[in-house]
Length: 478
Ligand code: NBP
Image (cartoon, rainbow, N blue to C red):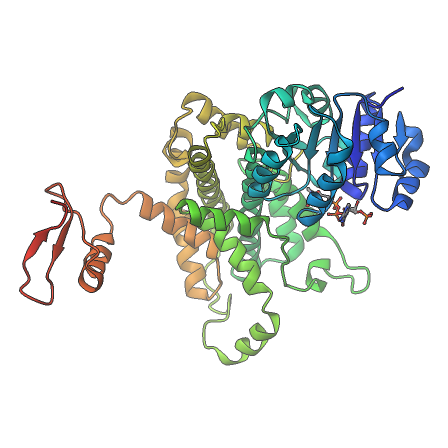
């Protein structure tokens, strides 16, 4: 019997995806560059379903029914191009190649075109949820031609996580759209994690709480508006004891955050698009700053400033304030991420359905959260929505939280605790709700030193003032 789908790349993600597919009764052909890994896969999981092992690319391709459907799950970057190059001569017109790794959307656009020249249909799909998600049900963000998606839709929706009977998989858009949305998902994940880390820092070093108590607070928060996978696992990470010291494991972990680059890509693209993506970008920079461990050690001895918690200020209501500040900042982070997807959708002609994106992120992925239901509802009601902050539900929630948010940001600032994501989110909120900001001065300065011109509030046209000469204003666009 021919296999209905193939998976090449049998590291943890590919192996688990192949097992997930087979568990749904679909015959799967498996392949890996290093054949030993394929053999190992068959030894461990061969009995779980209908697998055919392709020792070589040729036998792998030959095992597939036509049009062939091949999921590529190898390391992002050059390996994906290598696999495409190797497979292309063995494939026939109409075959579907699916890159399910964390590829950059621009690479996906390029590969879509290159494959089309050989008559191949290329898809770039985002898969979130880590290794467990891949096995038990990920959130899947498929990009590519709609008619190609139709041929893999049944498989993908069946292996995806399901929430209230709805699969966490829906068509996203052409070429790089799926990988783009996955990239923004990862960016939002960076912001979410940074906000949680800042909340923990405040609870521990300003409120002066023990780690075990903070674990309890996160457990408690997970029963309300903040309910989410990340809040849930924060409680677990905080509660974990270190086998060697008996204290919190957290205290034994080096405070240097690593990153694989998808957060950075999100920020880089926000800069290209001109979207104010402050929360995610601060989260990326916070990881970068954390990595300067040796410099921080030196600076901690030399730079003046308050010691967090030393002021012994009142902690009345502080825990509730931090919860509200966390929630309001999170709303901002998501509002910005969704704004970026709106801008990208316009720039690339993707016609993204943002309500559907919130829907497929409700399960299977790292940012799964109760609050995504509200985001879905907001975009269902108004698909052209400019900013989530303007929706009644979020507007009211932030209005309710803002006094607490301001207290937390000023308290942290006074006590010398860096909360870049909390404070930049508040700065964005205040900047966004300001009818008239100080950019008039920026324009005046630009016109002074560079004759860059400015527009006036009372008249149409572009103007330049001869600031340093006779002070006269001239219209420059006529
Ligand atoms: P890795 O990203 O560690 O990649 C290992 C796989 O790539 C192996 O199968 C390896 O084959 C293959 N490979 C490499 Br490396 N270079 C190759 C080449 N030139 N030609 C053919 N195959 C090559 O695996 P992973 O952690 O399973 O992740 C796979 C993809 O899924 C990545 O894009 C990753 O970013 C994405 N992703 C990962 C997670 C996660 O939680 N790990 C979550 C979501 C998405 P070999 O056995 O011969 O070395």
